[in-house]
Length: 96
Image (cartoon, rainbow, N blue to C red):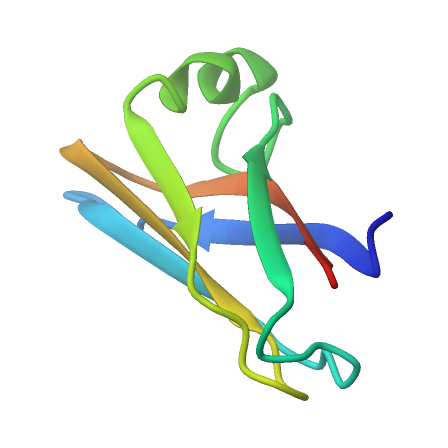
């Protein structure tokens, strides 16, 4: 069972964009160094992209999480061989 879950936004920036983005998931006072962290790309519209855009973007964007920092949180990292612009919504979770 998840201890915490939420949404966050990956921002690849304005034109010409970037092939990397990251977002810090902070404020997780109950997280421990041994907690499992996870991220899930979702087909959701954002201010920059349509539902259809996000449905296919994650075919080229890989997402992963760093190890948890006790009492703090973790970081979600995204990387692609291609440059992207704007924001994409992701969902995150952590559990002990």
